[in-house]
Length: 97
Image 1 (cartoon, one colour):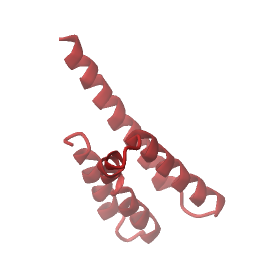
Image 2: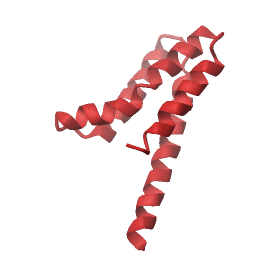
Image 3: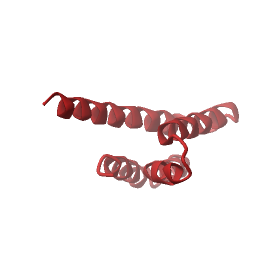
Image 4: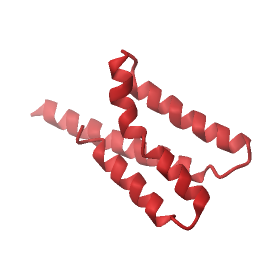
């Protein structure tokens, strides 16, 4: 659970930074639910990583094809992948020692 807290903090901070750009603010607030998708989908026995990736890609594609603001979702995917890489690195590091 500790690995998901930075995601929430980063997305919430970005939404507060873009408070006066409403389109960006709304999309970053939508991205703050990412840390909560994992535990919810795990309770109904679905792969949480797959659900999160499908969620992010579907949001991105929907905004892109409706000609709306999609850059916050690109930023969100990037932050999620960096967080995922950091978690994988530390898990591999723990298993080596």
